[in-house]
Length: 465
Image 1 (cartoon, rainbow, N blue to C red):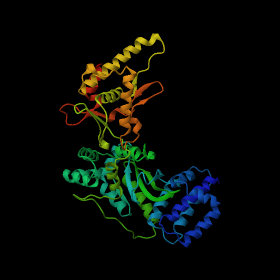
Image 2 (image 1 turned 45 degrees about the vertical axis):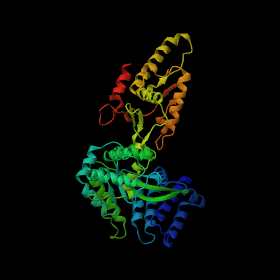
Image 3 (image 1 turned 180 degrees about the vertical axis):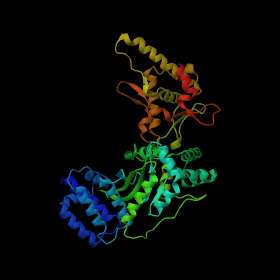
Image 4 (image 1 turned 90 degrees about the vertical axis):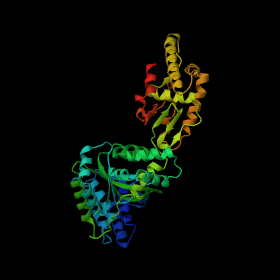
């Protein structure tokens, strides 16, 4: 057995002992026997404190040591009842170990450890997640939602299905919902409240996973997740940093059967038939603000690590970032026009590099002429005189414009990957903005809502030059 395996085993046993937040004589006696059995010395115990629980489980899953997984599972079962009682919190961790380590298990499951500072919900919460919308699974959940919810509730688990929460928000009087958001975030502007309210009411499970859990919260393990139940099984420390541990169980259109099988297995480990069951549910004109519900609202109301869209308003001469409730400040028309031009250019960017020889001069001149015409066209749409647009082909004029634009964009708060929103210059001398075109919108004259850049009059006029 490798030293890494001993360290992983020490971590697993440690989390089992601490699951119910009580350390007793029976557990210490069992711990001493298991340390002797697996050769876990003081060094392995110390290193185990720096290893996330999920990494420990993965190390054992990947171990090519005959009989190790079966032995470990048996010893973990002994550990959970060494004090004569298997608590609810211990059964959660034990369920994760059984599903991850048992090769004959009918579930496809794994364990994930996440820094609590990034994402933290109540223990025993079961959240449905998916990276891409799966109609079969979602239809199955909608058809059996009450049954799934009650099955989990009676096992002391709380099932969270985001669309049901959003439906509750939609059914609430809009002015009341807005007043609640304003109470929770009094510093947010009226426009920011409108955008937050609109974004919340349009939120879908796949968007929540990709844009919020992955991009905003930094949980990269869920970037390409299959439809699954993400169950909070406990908390632990890695060094001095608090982590939350989750069990992820793959589900399909037969999700009700999966839930029933899991609940049967989970309840079969509990030493008592009596345990606390929460009956708290949101009702009309009433909102929960704890656990996942608080986490969801905090993600929208706390302006941090947000993947915002960009809205160009030619008539107000503004560049607005609605999801962070901010505008690009300190800019003149010349900088706004350049930013709009770069967004229209997309990955192609703007190449101002002069040729190294005379043969490329004619092509360079044609490229500069087209860049300047496109810039002048957008400059005119922002209220200026196209004929008096600054000459971007002149480096002495262009450099201060680029510098001013970069300073303004660098000062924007709360953006996820802020460099994607700023002007960059690659090794070939090409200037560009690396934001997805799908995040760029333009306000049209007389329009109720901004339209995608590619469908806007600004883009059409840029394209025609």
